[in-house]
Amino acid sequence: MEAILDRHIVVDPTICHGRPHIDGHRIRVQDVVVWHERLGMSVDEICADYDLSLAEVYAALAYYFDYKQMIDQHIEADEVYVDAFKGDNPSILQKKLKKLRGQ
Image 1 (cartoon, helix red, strand yellow):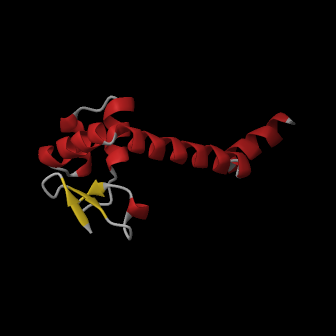
Image 2: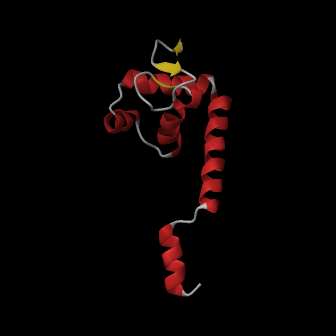
């Protein structure tokens, strides 16, 4: 196991598929990035909602900016996976709505 950024961020191949995460949590760096950069959550909101310290959240963001290309690739890969999954597995609600509409 490799400890990074004052032991707040850990990369362990047996946890979170080897993706960088906050030590003691299964919260990946990319999760914090999406919450903060894409959803506009403040650092304080992330801390409160996910029981993290300011140091842990700032360490995740610092790690992101040090390894931006890699983390962005992880985010993109997950988005591609989700889109493929959605295409292969339409929601039950969507099926029922189409049936009700006669489509």
